[in-house]
Structure formats: C-alpha cells, structure tokens
Image (tube, rainbow, N blue to C red; front, top):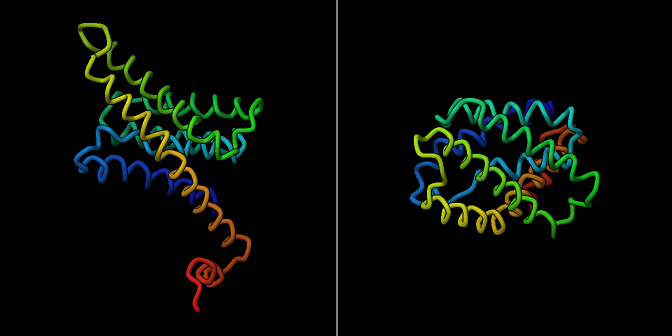
Length: 179
C-alpha cells in the first residue's frame, strides 16, 4: 500500500508541475518541486526502496515535460544516489540543513539542465539570460524548499498513522478533531 502511495505522489508532482505550475504567471522562477520529494525519499527510505520511485518520477517528468528523454531520469537518479551517500557522512535530517540540501540539489539540477541545453545548441555556451532565473531558483529553494519538505514529511507521517491504526476513521479523527 505504501508503494502505491509513493507512486501516486510521483504522478501528482509531475501533473502539478506540468499543468498547474505552467499556468502561473511566474512559473519560470519556481524551482522543480520534485526535488524536496527526492531528498525526502533519499533520507527516509533505503536506496533500494527509494530508487524505483525516483526513476518513476524521472520517467513521468521526461514523458510529460517535453524535454529530451532521459534528462530528468538521470538527474533525479544522480541526486538520489548523491544524497543517499551524503547521509552516511552528515546528519542531514536536521531542519537547519534542509534549506541548504534543497538549494544544493536545485543548483545541481539547474547546472545539469544548463549543460544539456547548451550542448544541443549550435553555439555552445551558457545563455546569459538563464543566470537570473537560476538565482531565483536558488532563492526560492532556500525559502520554500524546507516548507515543501516539511509538508511532505507531515503528509507521510499522517499516512503512516493510518497504516498503523488501520482505520480511516481514526485518521479523520486525528486530522480533523471535533470539539
């Protein structure tokens, strides 16, 4: 059941980013919202359990985003592996570290996307107009990234309560208490 819910999370994130986020007026300035989810999976699940969902998320993103196929798949894969390795050396589940982890992941993703896009152009090199957008991505990742991470953590803790208690009525009582 938990695996089905992680798969539904992946599908929701991709649909949210490729449909709803694209219609917002300043969508180009918002970072990839699946980055906090990848960090969450890397921190709280073993690599063997988190990797299928990271690959599924990358596959969905590649299929629906219109970018070169395999780009998001490889970026998400390497981010998950890197953050899984970082947890061996750092205590990254502290809330003070999360903004920097999300910022680092967003910067690495933007860097890899910029390299991929610049290698497909006739003129190789970085587009100067992409530098302010990367700055906005980093700033929003530092500010909003931890909130998205905490939201994911809260939703998953509520789901775990439901699976432990086994009843939807108990979950409803915890989420929406009556006075």
